[in-house]
Length: 434
Image (cartoon, rainbow, N blue to C red):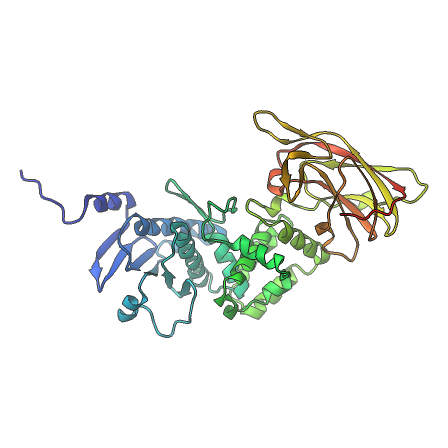
């Protein structure tokens, strides 16, 4: 029997077998068509591993969207979109697939069951962009709306931030490394804005409108606010309830959001300020919770002539309310002792309150004891931390409550072991916090 040469390359047949239900049609009008269970991909790019895996990634994303938005998987069985992956817009325009009434968009756009995505320089960000627009489509067609612009774009960014490894997909990833998320840049957008003195409050962000997203920076802030609420244990559950309000218009949705969190007041503002101050790759707000002192424990005011008072600081927790009150203009002596473990490698790294100078975090030795004063009317006191180390004599600039923590990235606190005992006594000094 004579063997016949197949009409398509062997690698394409192999890809088809690997993709299961995914297939392709013949080229038409210079455009190529790929089919998945939940996506019909139309592109002028070559059919290769880069394009064929997009259909697989999209199909795998649908169960994740169902779980996150609490949608029955059965109701999404036949859900499908058409995605146009564009290198040369003229080809799509000539084919009638890039309508003239589409608004100007930077990289992608969604309308109903159709999305348009411009080719990107990296495979990771191309997947991110397709998942971003896919999230919009899932929200609008499965939940009946997208809510306010900041929520729509922020949640799309949140869920599109993904990991794709060995054929397995996970959405809503913690961006742990710049190198692992090339071209994404949302964290840098926020950092650059803060460095330029343009930090945004929560009220600023919820006022974003659709036209604001003709620039990239609002995407960074919208991702940040959704990442913050989605991860923070004090706010996560209520934030997830917001998806039930996506049918509301922009103003009504944001008003509903305000009502959901109106009783959090200064605590919410404080936690947001702490989040944006520390935001970096690998940062997780779930690990940087401010530990409040139970009201029943009361407070201790340290006054001249009074005995010293002491408090224990857990090396595995973020900022901890000591319950110790200080007064503006009064000098204090803070002394700390104890040892704790900050790393578990071949040999544990043991630190004392002065910290370990072989590694630094935010310009200070790893493990160094830090303090901050939070006044009742202040929301950014934790941003003004100062070093205590083994001993520090200092003059309080504001009245309020002392908070303590170990200097380390929040995501790496959890494996610490041990605590520090700090004693505080009124003293004399003209020194101010650094």
